[in-house]
Image (cartoon, rainbow, N blue to C red; front, side):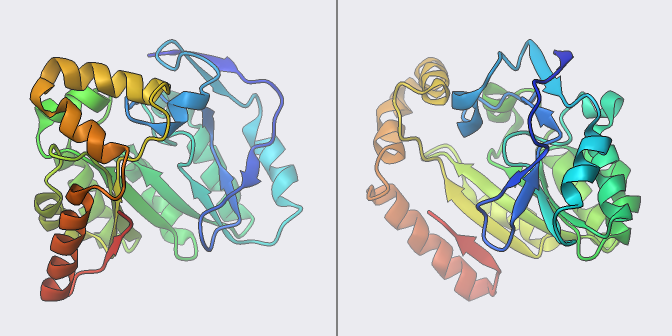
Length: 265
């Protein structure tokens, strides 16, 4: 586990740019999951493998900030995973949810961890709380190459099933689709029975010098050398034939099976 230290003074509640959501809360600064493709790595203040930061008194600070806005749904999962491993001990997320419930707010959570099941009791009491899981890999070996500190697909899917049975709204992000590595159709088949909607995003990286692409390049060169150039070609061009083909396949699947797929490729 990384060292956990207090962060510098900053807001807990920050603006959110996602449609229909005005604010977000990241209970941690940094993420122990350390997914090598993650966009947030490029703005990391510290090496998250070594050090994660927390707000010294997140409840008191957030209570003051929530007092300035009307009750609404708050997003959790933009710059960090609220249920990364240290949450089991530090319970920052649990404290946030308890406060939000007390003040009449609800939560929309994105995670990769089945630890979220611990907080089912709070989510059930909120007004239309939702939990989304992101999934990107079809087999455990490949997952471990890119996001070794996360739980496997089986645990994520079982958590979605349990949340759905508990009456909590569920969704999935098929994200990121890595060209020639991710079998999107197969993952949709696994996710569809336990989710209300599946959002599908391709791996998009703008900066070849960014930390996330340098990590990706190293892994691909070592493990999939024959795919490195085809993957890079598609990743850096949304006009690539790979995306056009996949969009067509997904639209046909959506129409044929009447699935709620939100295709953002």
